[in-house]
Amino acid sequence: DTGVSQNPRHKITKRGQNVTFRCDPISEHNRLYWYRQTLGQGPEFLTYFQNEAQLEKSRLLSDRFSAERPKGSFSTLEIQRTEQGDSAMYLCASSFYGNTEAFFGQGTRLTVV
Amino acid sequence: SQKIEQNSEALNIQEGKTATLTCNYTNYSPAYLQWYRQDPGRGPVFLLLIRENEKEKRKERLKVTFDTTLKQSLFHITASQPADSATYLCAPPGAGSYQLTFGKGTKLSVIP
Image (cartoon, rainbow over all chains, first blue to last red; front, side, top):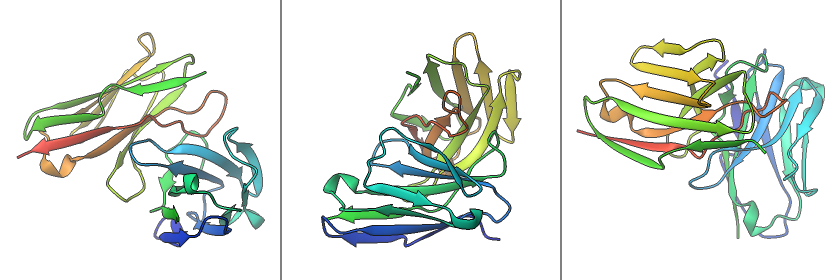
């Protein structure tokens, strides 16, 4: 296992289009997190899964955002009707327990034009 | 609501010196706190975790302290090297949850 994998690494889309990102966590990790990061800011929490259950969502998460983790393995994050303000780095992380270190993927950089 | 502040957006130090980065938190009392390193265009990488009952934690040239009275964590890099240049992020958990809440980070530049 080589760590958390995210695909694609880069995505350019036109405003109004839908996009979907994929995250493959470290296989034995049951916790999975999505974060968003813009330039000069720290990662901002979006949502969290424990196995297949989505246990927490940020209040800042628009209804245009949805995430799934079927079977408690990989996860997808979909953004519908993208806006220019959605342009950011989307980071996925996984951990074995909640109070241990999180392992981050390389991120997917989204540019909405 | 809880707030995390890293006191410097950027810190420049001479190679060989000790870098000290500060993280202050308000409005809650986290049971632990993590520090991460982030290089440009890459995801954060875990460095150290310190729990509320630990005053200090060390790993090679890294040292973290956790003062629950001052609501502050200090992150030290001794004998700094240009390869230590990166953004360092402080990350306590969110109040009542397991998700991490990140500060803005401090961009450290170690000058040869």
